[in-house]
Image (cartoon, rainbow, N blue to C red; front, side):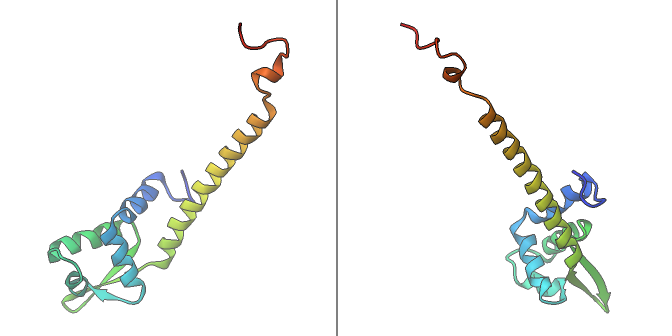
Length: 124
């Protein structure tokens, strides 16, 4: 599925990143403002390195940006990337709704077996 020029690989990275509870929480926290990776790590029962890995997955997906300020790495959610993920979901929804609508039309057009041949009934 190509979304506004995004390749399948890019969309896959977006949804892989969003599939994890911790990464979604990091996104929510960073929407409110820039946070350092060390500050983020304080919020989770995991190592600093594990939080860094989660941030790296989000960064590869383009969902967050990271910048260095002195010794700290500051993380911020990229609202445009979140919008692209939403657009991908909207396009998936549209495609599936179209399929369901087509199936409903086909079923409405297709008379059941009893309506096709009234002389045929249950075997006795």
